[in-house]
Length: 485
Image (cartoon, rainbow, N blue to C red; front, side, top):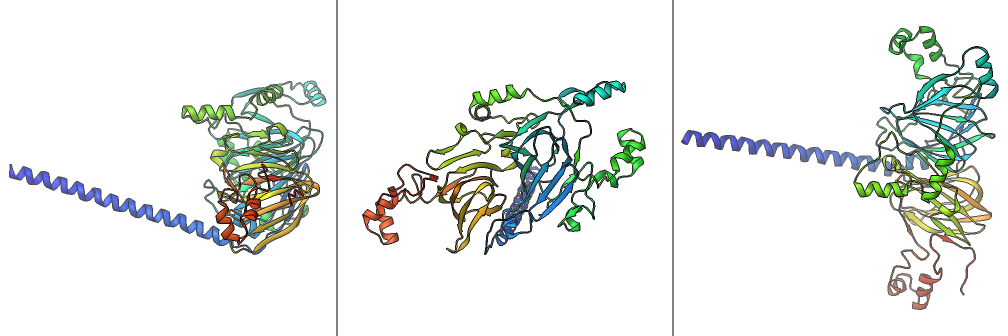
């Protein structure tokens, strides 16, 4: 009996020691992980020691036969601080931006035009079937050659148009085709700091066709920049690829051709006809819902479910005035798109806004609580001021059409539109952004007691009351030259 008792005690003691050792190891691992996170944040903070912010134009341009791609310099301090790589694609009529994927999420704003986009999510089934044929004369020529039409299965193809914001997840192969009557202009932000990107802070795109030549038709490009846009099939062994696809080697050789004279945006020879959802029904549904995806998202939250990535909506429009989240008859409007309107942004941890300031109107001085802001000037001009934690002015410039600049997290900023007004797009590195305002109805100043303001600024109670109340019911957007004294 004593032997049994001692054996039982020995087993319990061993179990206790093993549990303690595991707890210590888990604690050390957690501490190491937290230290690693703190190290990462420290590195990013060091990148945000900015002395000067300014409006920036694209520094590089890649020419292709069907359009061109413009890149902002991701090594600029302001873009390094935000951890983003901006770019702009211009796709000409009847041209195709070739399939590619990238290791970070990309949030796209359609500045002009219309087209079709296909985003292929890994592991999702081909749920659409169409007859592969070309438009008008192209179809007739094919039929005359006896080719007729062939059945094709593929993942969903989406209609995009001016004012749309389009979410492209990390690792999803995608292409874009301009079937409109004007150039399709798409401005994008790539979030290099996103957890999906475990490579480094350099922008990469992996192309499945085409490529950029390293001499000749390139403007202001370093060799390293052109190497970002190359066909990955060209480096594989031809016989191995033929076996993998079970196709003749001649087809593989065609896949491996650089075709660098064509670039990464190519002309479509005979046009394309691709099945897509009924656009009128889709737009009518959004109009009925008021805010795209809002009712669905509320139902999801209530049921504790998540939408399947294969059927998740990837775009919504920011142009409609009656859907504006902030509207002022005297100052302007702002449309926000976050995870409530576009649930896929919850995975990407990004959001966007489209704003319009009327001539001489102001955006209240404010700071972003939980993310950086990347602002693109679509039309007009504005005076922008940004102040850091040292009380120093890091930006006091007039920004113009086509320029882009960053307002880092917690840096206070304000904007005043010029005589012709100001239209802008904002990308944020948060799916649920939050601002704190300094002036207006919902400001921190208005929320403080008069006695606090009196003593903080050495002003009279009447002056403190005017400081709190003089903007009346105005909030984020402030009308110009409003005076009560």
